[in-house]
Image (cartoon, rainbow, N blue to C red; front, side, top):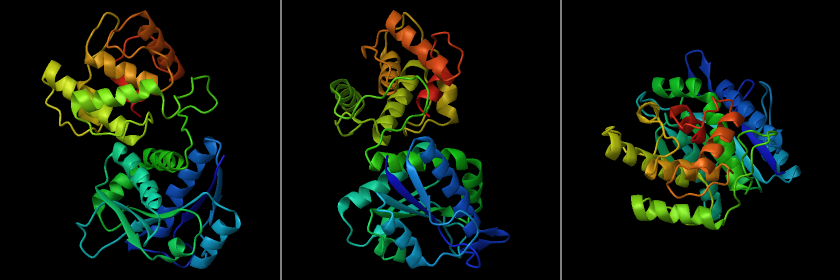
Length: 321
């Protein structure tokens, strides 16, 4: 269990950025609460610098983190600009901070990229007070522009998915394993460094030129590489016409064809790889035999899906959520 301090920016008489009746302080608190809920569901210790509409001085936010010996500090904000076309999400770290601070910030952005919707503006550096005065690794996340209509729509529509993505990125940074079904009887995911996991990653590099690290860890880049592999196979086998961007969106989901017992192809290989990374011990060999069918049925049952052993769009969607 790690100690995570979440800092919803602004509050009270400090509205932050404003767009009509929409106040940044409220959006910051909304997303921070959802991230806190998800992290607590995962068994992490979460401390909020504020959990209501009150003003907290900047230095006090850092003091809360420092006094609790936080393992990580995440400040939530919305961006704004005079040009309403400005858009996207960006994550700030302190100027001249250790390189792993940047990697932590990148982990969160990578998870948000898997949800899609926001343009990724990257990791940037600044001398913000909450970054400068906080001892723990820290980041300041600008979750879209409150001055941009599209970003506000994405913020509202995908707020739950983005909260989970942020929680995943935080946990990945702290070396914690995210469990999609805490408290369930689902198997545990393979530990980083697993030989089969490394073999899958090397296979993705060799076959699909994924260019990912062969470290045995199932992070955002490996998942994105598997989605891209799926898109390539759907294009080659079924002329799906998908953009091979590694994002499992509506078009990719709709293009998925059912994979079932007796199949022998790379779609089976991708399915088996996804099952393996979710903790289901299958041979990743591209052959849909009885063991793969049993693993699919078990996974479907744990996810509340129809347990028929046939991997269709809903099964792939769950595996890639």
